[in-house]
Image (cartoon, rainbow, N blue to C red; front, side):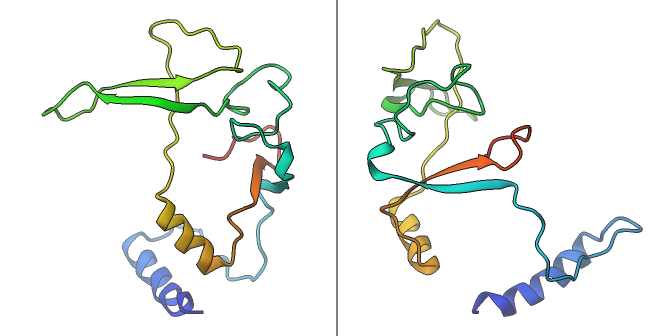
Length: 145
């Protein structure tokens, strides 16, 4: 409820700064668009050490749609005083079946600070002991960021 007055003033301010293209209109209906992602709660004993269901690699192997979640073992800054950071990262890829070769790349998804997550969960009434899976509702769409 505290957010409602702010939102009521946000949209007109945004539209004043960034007008919609000609012919476009704001959808004032109360209906929601179809869900882009399906969210499910995982059973506590179904989750492995890498944060996913312990069924092994998915059919077709690990991919952008089915990433392997590795634990970071080492994070060392290699540069200083430059406009871009270069780091040496060591990841635990045990159980992934990966074979590392120099020059391979990896996508890193940072974690939010625990205190901020707790505040967010408390405000929304979420149970932080639950583990969830998030998957595209349409299997041909991109995975969640």
